[in-house]
Length: 212
Image (cartoon, rainbow, N blue to C red; front, side, top):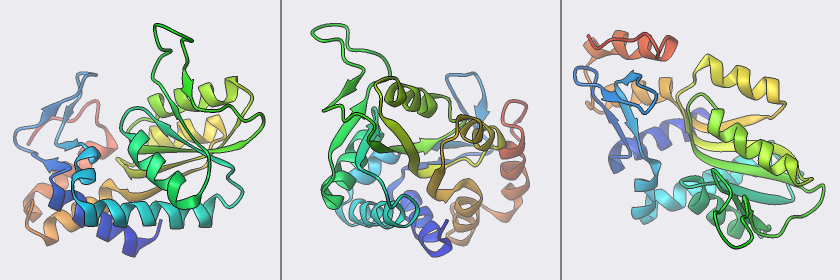
């Protein structure tokens, strides 16, 4: 992870309101976990300067860490627009992976041309535990393409996510992680220093964390 890029992306996510931090009044995830952070990177698409910066940062990372990529696949839904922007910039074929097969017509799970044995770089907006992202990896592999790697804008940096990607044999690169975001959030007065300990504890044990 490029520290300069990570810091800039963190600032942009906060500026766009794509990330909200609320350690005293946490959000509740679908899993039931209490979380002091809510992330919706789709909001960055509404800001041309931010959208463009992230697009070029993803492209630079793709060139550096995944030089042999032959196609880009966005993970639905939030990874689709960034994946399409990236594929266009790199002049590569684009596909996207649905969370489940379409319930009519051809019942596709992957939309786009299947390229046998192609090295596919998957694009996500957010990595939490990695579960939904790795389902997309399985989908790509199931049709005879290679899951060459995963590129994402932001990650909560959970240990379980790193373990899951390692076990699946999928290299993961992200532009910005939760620890970098916290540092930038303090620097820009989105949170106070007194909140840091609680916010850091959440990343270590999100299933057991309680608001301070």
